[in-house]
Amino acid sequence: MISYADALNLIDANVEPLDARQLGLGEIGHAATADPVASRLNVPAFANAAMDGFALRAADTSAASAEAPLRRPVTGIVAAGDAPGDSPPRGAAVEIMTGAPMPRDCDAVIPIERVETETDAADRIVAIAIREPLATGRNVRSAGEDFRAGQIVLDGGQPAEPHDVMALAATGNDSIAARSMPRIAVITTGSELADAGAPSAPGMIRDANGPYLQSFIESIGATQTMRLNVADRPEDLEAALESASRDADVILTTGGVSAGRYDLIPDAVERLGGRSVFHKVAIRPGKPLLFAQLPNRTLIFGLPGNPIAAAVGLRFFVVRSLRRLQGLPPEKFHSAISDERIRKRSALCFFGKASARADDDGRLRVTLLPGQESFKIRPLTQANCWAIVTEGPEIVEPGEVIRIAPLYPTGFLQD
Image (cartoon, rainbow, N blue to C red; front, side, top):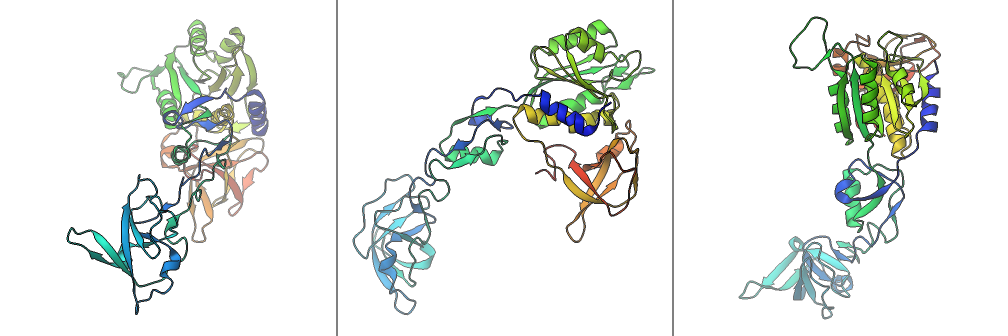
């Protein structure tokens, strides 16, 4: 049995990032950049109006005041999408719309609501009265004010969020080198398992882990290549693992990793030529966790069958490997003040179903929920985080600081 920290180090040492490929903007949701991405152009590409109004030379407004407004003729109009207009005559203005390119030699825009207008018989604006001087650059978006051509838009090894896609499109990047979310297969084991809606039968247990893992995979944008329940027969399990390994980067199994007669996962992995990286970690819940690798480099995580033990294995070990496959750094968890005394075995790292809140001073505080047994699901539905108490102390006193993690990598508290 190895420590939690040693298990994480072994994951990092044995998991290599997936190959990057070019992904279009419509494909990069949940993907991670492989290399830094630079802007292909200035954004804005040209100086343009920040609002509807009138473009002119700021110097031509220096004498304007409420007591002595300046009358300026309007000699043209430019809309968004038009080419930049010619320079207006000295002392004249050009009507301009938001986003339209600034006419040559114009360096300020006065909003339409800040002037008085004169119109002709056709209701066209022919002149404006200005009651205030304008500073150079007023209400003008300069070329390259947001991004300069060649400026880094996204760093390498960074998840591409929806706002990042916005930036990529604006900077002329229609595709990037990125690593998609890994492909994941799910195999639940146990002859006793029944689907949620199946008729009741003596001794049967509803399969909670399979739907849970499927929901998790969908929530992170990964592809589930297989979801299968396998009875406790070695030949069936071996065939399922071999089939899953053809299309999956990661295989998640539940059950069958402890030391009982029907704990068949370790032997099945060995018969397929796989290598056990570690089996059993000094954690609670989830101690029987298995991490192995098949000859084709498909990763296998053998999660315990108890649902909370499986959830801990998924959250703190599988997620670590998924980030590694995408070339992302490990997560950074947060600190919180314990509201209560916590007892645990000193040799184990404990993961508790917990509730965190901010106190009146803005400090995070955390409370363990009743029902920490690994078979109890109901407390997890009331939790908003995991409390993490590392190996060493048997007792955490109220007021001491521990680590907490969001229930899922996309949850609150995430860096």
